[in-house]
Each structure stands twice: as C-alpha cells, then as structure tokens.
Length: 116
Ligand SMILES: Nc1ncnc2c1ncn2[C@@H]1O[C@H](COP(=O)(O)OP(=O)(O)OP(=O)(O)O)[C@@H](O)[C@H]1O
Ligand SMILES: [Mg+2]
Image (cartoon, rainbow, N blue to C red):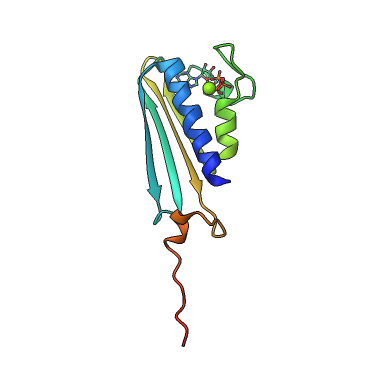
C-alpha cells in the first residue's frame, strides 16, 4: 500500500537525521494535482563521503541493519541523494499514486459522469 510505503520512508529518513545529524527537517509536498507525494529530508550534519556505499544493502556506520536508504529507494518511485562532507545531506524521494489507488488524495481528482 502506498501510504505504508510513504510513512516508512518518512520514518527511515527522519531516523537517519536523528542518528547521524541530530537536527534537520522533513518536508512533504504534493505534486501534479496531488497525484504524487515528495518527501525531502534535509540536514546540515556531517555529510556522507561515499554516497554509493550508503545505498548498498547492509552498509552501516552505526552497527544497525543498513537497510534504511536502500529500502527507501526500493519503496519509492524517484530517489535522489546529495551530500557534501562537512555541510550536510539532502534526500528527496517521490511516490506517484496509481490511478487504481482508492486513496482519497487521488480520488479527489477523478470526475464522475452525469447520467441522463
Ligand atoms: N543524514 C545522514 N547524514 C550522514 N550520514 C548518513 C545519513 N543518512 C545515512 N547516512 C549514512 O549512510 C549509512 C546507511 O544508512 P541507512 O539508513 O541505509 O542504514 P543505517 O541507518 O545504518 O541502518 P538502518 O537504517 O537499517 O537502521 C549510515 O550508516 C550512515 O553512515
Ligand atoms: Mg537508517
């Protein structure tokens, strides 16, 4: 379910901010008349030296599972990570809601035909 995937992504990104940067911000915005949801996680913590490594399953610097970022990447449709050592990290990830999704956020945009 899309809602579960989105909440999992928010929680993983928020937990990374707390563990690795202590302080940061999670932003949520809707896209394309609410057919997409974009999450942004921004911090000004230590940054990441080898971004590619952090996207590999089981890579961790905190003795955890190393499942957070690769998991978010799999759950969502679009994923970008920008990081500069000493400056911080920004992760942006988007989920596009499918037309068959009964989620009210999408149904709001569906028009119904009038009967004669
Ligand atoms: N916001 C961040 N700032 C600095 N380093 C980060 C940040 N987010 C992730 N990292 C680095 O990327 C690694 C992988 O992150 P990921 O979320 O995949 O795994 P984890 O946090 O180690 O474990 P898990 O999420 O499974 O508990 C982290 O161990 C850390 O070194
Ligand atoms: Mg994590």
